Amino acid sequence: MIQRVTRASVTVDGVVAGGIGRGLLVLLGVGRGDDEAAGRWLADKLLKLRVFEDAEGRMNRTVSDAGGGILVVSQFTLYGDILKGNRPGFDAAAAPETAEPLYEKMVCYLRAVSPVPVETGRFRASMEVSLVNDGPVTFLLERQGSGAFSGASGGNMEDERFQRGLDTVRRIDAGNAGRLEEALKDIAPDLYRYIIGFAFGDVISRPGLDLKTRETVTVSALSAMGNAQPQLRVHLNAALDVGCTRAEIVEILMQIAVYAGIPASLNALSLAKEVFAERDAKGRA
Image (tube, rainbow, N blue to C red; front, top):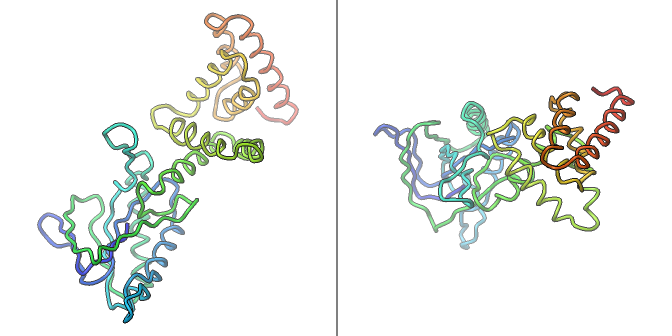
């Protein structure tokens, strides 16, 4: 989040850690999948933004043209999800041990290339931010489709979910997302984004279970359904790829006979036999 200000400061333990007069206040969030390149992109973008008025009253001048400064304050709550329930979730935010060095490298790069002063708060500290928004003028900024450093909150939530889902799919089966997109692009391209965003971005990426356990559950459910052979084939391969053994899969498919019936178990075992043979032919475990 970028705010054009007439003044802004950040205080830590009663002491001013950083402050500017006229310029840009940047509330910076770091999300999953962010990297140094994203930080450099954001820094370069801040210096090029023409959000200060010229003599004719148009937004046509950069922060340098306006003789301003930049205050960068870390704020992981920009990645808080408040769409579901009343307590925010922060699964989309990078872990502090990942976010802090990326934040510091972004600030270091910004200071190196900026012609104006760059001030900061203190990462992970409890901070009090004071500002006078000039306008008011506020922008949300995030590089689309990259999981890049964010100044944005709700506006790009769907893109964040989709990117998080893609990252999860690639960890399980790098080719699955491409096959799914190819299958749906001519008939229901939106469904592809819904599946990636919801199933993989919201549910499977949650931290409560590891991927092996999640694939075990998925194989069990699809086998019990009895009418999802194409999806079961995909997830049998995925389960093997994330660490399930063939013996474990056979045990899972045998056990569902107790609750889903012998035909469902037999059909799933038959498909598993095909998958094992296909993997053997390709030299895959």
